[in-house]
Image (cartoon, rainbow, N blue to C red; front, side):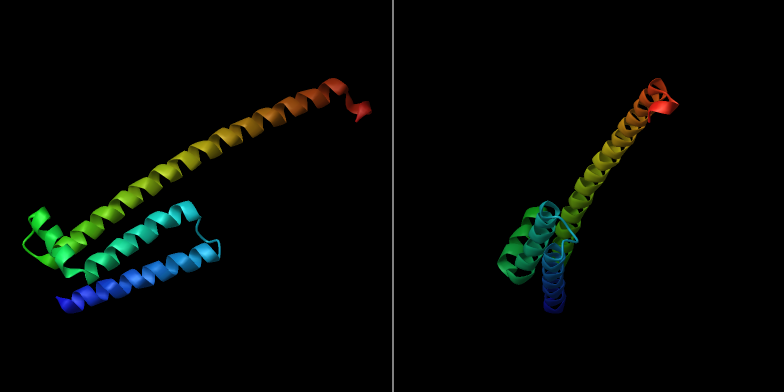
Length: 121
């Protein structure tokens, strides 16, 4: 089990570094990086603090400590993916509304150009 916890700690560190580098290079926005950083930090904390992980295992009623770690991590990541799905849905709706407004503006601009006449451009 120690090897599994060490691998989990290493992967958590890799995720932390990856997110920090991505924020620095502006590949990910800061408000989205916070949840990734928090998830990686919690995974690192749980993989290094054995008594805390045992408390999570007892609280969840699971028979195995590594199973509780990965169940907790899976739940956190599912919640994060749901949050990002909501954000993407809102962005899609905003893009549709923006495209509709642009089409209306182009239509009105065409009407103004027709009313001015072809000789007064």
